[in-house]
Amino acid sequence: MNNSGLAASLLASALLTAAAATPAHAAAPTKMWVAKSGADSASCGATTAPCRTFQQAHDNVAAGGAIGVLTPGDYGVVFVSKSVNITNDGAGEAATPIGFGNVNVRAGPGDVVGLRGLLFDGAGSGSGGIEFDSGSALHLQSCVVRNFTGTTGAAVGIYFVPSTKAKLFVSDSIIHNNGSGGGGFTGGIIVRPGNHADVDIVLNRVRLENNVIGLHVDTFSTTGDVHVAIRNSVVSGSSGNAMETMADPSPTSRIIAFVRNSAVIGNAGVGISSFGSSIVAVSAATVARNGAGLSATNGGQIISYRNNEIDNNTGPDGTPTGFFAPR
Image (cartoon, rainbow, N blue to C red):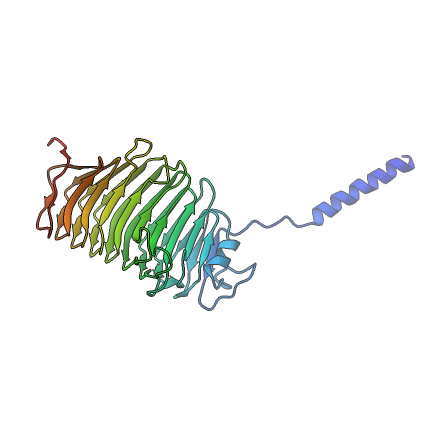
C-alpha cells in the first residue's frame, strides 16, 4: 500500500473510532414530575429530582409527554408550545398563580394539550385562567377555574381564541366567579375564533356558576363555523346572560349548538340567547328564574324538541322559533 492509501486508511479508522466513542444524544423523557420541594434545572423531572415549576417540566419533557404532580403546591404560569398532559391525580391542591393566561397554549398544528385535576384561582385580581391561542385541541377535566375578576381588560376563566381549526373539551369541572366590568365579553368561558377557524366545543358535566356571562360564543372574527354541544351541565348565577351565541347575520359563518339535559337557572340576563346565523337546539332542559328565558334576534334560531321546561322566569319566558317533530 502506498503512503497516500495508508494515510486514508488510518484516517477512516480514526473517524470510526471517534464516532463509536461519541455517545448518542439522549431523547427527552416522556414523563416529568413536579413537587413543592423540587428544584428547576435542565435535568430535573425524575421522581427523585422533581422540577419546581410546570414551565421547567414542560421544557424538559418530550412532545406528547406527561407532567405529574407529587405534592400540593403552586407551580407557576406555563406557556405551552407542544403536545403535553399536565395531571394531578390526588396529590392535593395543584395551583397556578394570579395572572392572565396562567396556562397559555400556543402550540402547533396537531398538538393536543390535556389539563386534569388542577386549580386556577385569580384570587379576585387575576384577569384570566386559561388562554388557548393555537393548537389542535384542549382537554380540561376535573378542574376548578375561579375568581378571575380583575379589572384590567376582560376577565375570563377560559379564553378560547384559536386562529386555526381547534377543539375544546371540558368535563367534570366547575368554572365560577369569573368576569368583571373591564369591558368586552367577560365571564366563565369565552369562545372567539379568528381567521378561518372552524371550532368544536363540548361541555359535559360542567358547572358555570356566578360568572358575568356564563358561556359566550361568537364568530365575529372568523369565516369558520362553530359547533357546540352542552350536556348534563348547569349555568346559574350569571350577572349577565347565561348562554349566548352570536354569529354575523351574513352566511359566511354559523354557530350550531345543542343543549341537552342541562339546567339554566337563576341568571340575571337571558337564559339562552341566539343572534344572527346561530341555531340552538334544546332538549330536556330546564330554563327558569332567569331575567328572560329564551331570546332569538337578528335571524337567530332556537329550536325545541318539545320536552323542555321553560317557565317561571322573572321576565318573558320566550318562545322557540321552531320545533322538531316528535318521534
